[in-house]
Length: 356
Image (cartoon, rainbow, N blue to C red; front, side, top):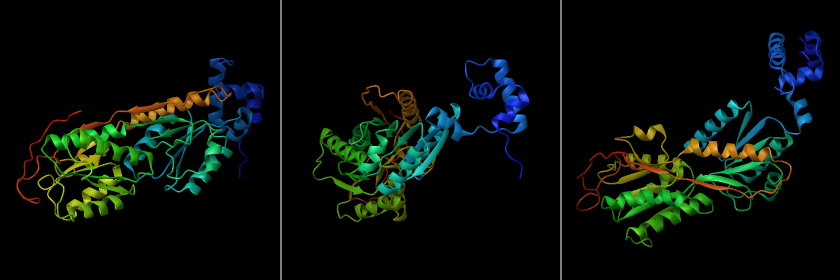
């Protein structure tokens, strides 16, 4: 097996000092552009690869960015990961993606590994029960929270206006004449779950409906929970005529459950989805949904993270809390409620343009 080319070998072949070659490969402003180009051309020709471990030892941090999420089946998280990946690639940084499955022990393991690798910064979607040890490690690593917010972490947070998101869905259904509207969302132990449920109830009161009598299902974040919750709602004797979902995977499961039971959407049930995955545009006449500016949120979070990483000298900072506004996209899954008893086959399916 051929031994890898070392920095000293590259320097000797160029007739330059090791320090000059190292600075040229790092694009140091102390080295002329001509020399930098000459060094890089020769490095490519010889197949030289920068020793990142050695560079990390010299600089104190690596070029790694960590992205820790509960799962990547959630369209929001997957889209955010892609946006962060593009951001890192444009800046010559390496992205490491880790999945916790909302397990605090797994989350701690990932944070430990990134900490040991002297990671430049971490984008974190916190688990439901983040551990004390994880919080201590994160206190010494530049990081930002994405979507979910853990109050025990004194760090920057970038997410959506959760209560406003629910208001968009409820107000839309109420404007069509719906008076019994259901809600399916994640557990209230998660910041987003609590805020969205509060927003749903507040929105009902604002449009003159009884929030205390509303049908609400709060629990898991996955499609399985959404599927089971919709089945329970459809089994009610006094069935709602509209439903607002508050999670990307919850939306998928809930919609599948309704269609499996032969429920006409929107003839019998108007359905408001969450996020705007491409599939939502193709189901039936398309799903009316609460769309989120995922790329904007991820990019803003990364810009902030880089600034924090460059301020690792202990300078005082005040955490930023930045909310991005969702929009309602109206498609074919919502209409006026059926006349007469629930389950009537009468439909009003007029298509409406996109509305903010």
